[in-house]
Length: 194
Image (cartoon, rainbow, N blue to C red):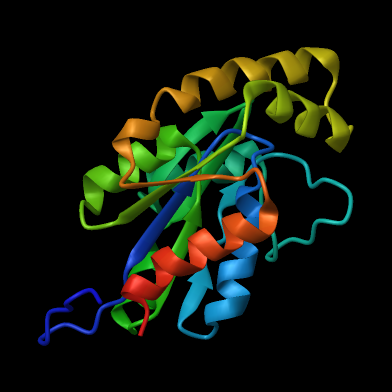
């Protein structure tokens, strides 16, 4: 068990990263469902267009590029980045409110954002999700059937870069078998969540 400072019942911040298509969202959703209401999902804000089936305020808070840029000027984000030509950011107020109330927050963010968040929250627990192989990752991204060939190449190039960051994370999980990966995530969270 992890020793928690008795004077503080502040929640932990969990940063989950990995290349596009590795299964981060499925694993994070599993953890939030398993440990609710103690663990909550930080919903990022993005300027990208919603994908089929996505609902504003559920998967993301959607906004225009102009609205996002205004929020940047107001220091509304704990971190933000431009990824695949769109803005993504973590609302600072959400993190503060949830963690101060004792809830643990899960962030599903790219490595660029993770490094910024870790700079501001060095106590954050960092988890990197890996594909069993680069070839399998490419297959998963292709199966999504959401990307043009140009976008696919961009995602694969970014994936190679992101994989080089795995050593900066305390925990690494290979998502070869989804049920085993879920169990690995549960074990990590069980160390910190009462």
